Length: 198
Image (cartoon, rainbow, N blue to C red; front, side, top):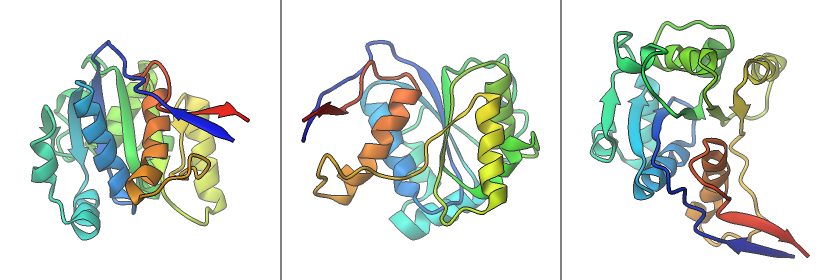
């Protein structure tokens, strides 16, 4: 078994909306944000109320800590913010991690907060939308909501890290998911962690 790790960085800089909600696994959102920033992309950030609490509990970070690494930050309660309109230019959007509440809101078009409204706009404008749920086990409601968002055009990437590249740290494990997310956001021309066969 062989795998190769390459830079895979896109030369085109993009404007990405990163949203962190209240599911466990805020490390996925933090690692993604930092990698996008490292690659020179323009980062717009929304952290939900419960995303902020989970971020502090799991990583000892506050939204203000991440705000220093983003180009623009929005309040999830602000439905007058730019991403609440389809006319606001975004190249892609990701909800990482995506709570089941956020998934349900997006699946049913219940845009009572900025994150589901921005996702609604992303779908209607036919832009890439990636959702990274972190929940187990899944009940039938969760599965059907994933079906609905997939039918609407979103890509669902469960926070299920790979092991075939033989990660040695939690960060390397997390980055196997982050790498897949970046590929589906179209911010990389190729995957950094690539299976090349035996």
